[in-house]
Image 1 (cartoon, one colour):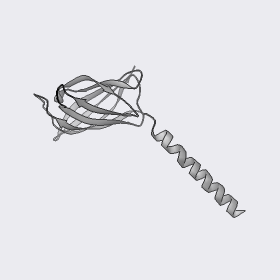
Image 2 (image 1 turned 90 degrees about the vertical axis):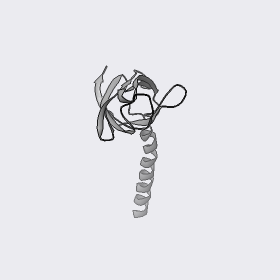
Image 3 (image 1 turned 30 degrees about the vertical axis):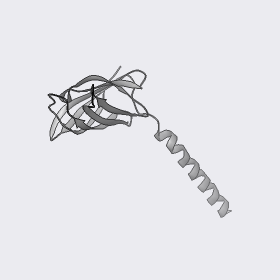
Length: 130
């Protein structure tokens, strides 16, 4: 009897673990919302803004200190890449939507003319849902 209960518990535990990857891969994007937050570079704070479209698969990214205002982004699996520039990539980074209202990311390259910030990290929260 004890062996049967142990086997049943093991099967139940393994079955529960197999459901985790399906949930973990789901997007945490709040479609049609505006995320506002702070970008920190060399101890200075700047405003960052991300607007997600109603589909939740695209949006606009703004970081004025790096010369980016309402640049289009593609969102997949709760993440997006930041790569902007005409002939060469002048601003590069990545971000991930965490939970149902938080966005975290980093900028790893900034070489735009006139930029006032360098590389750094940002965190933003849902400020407005349309």
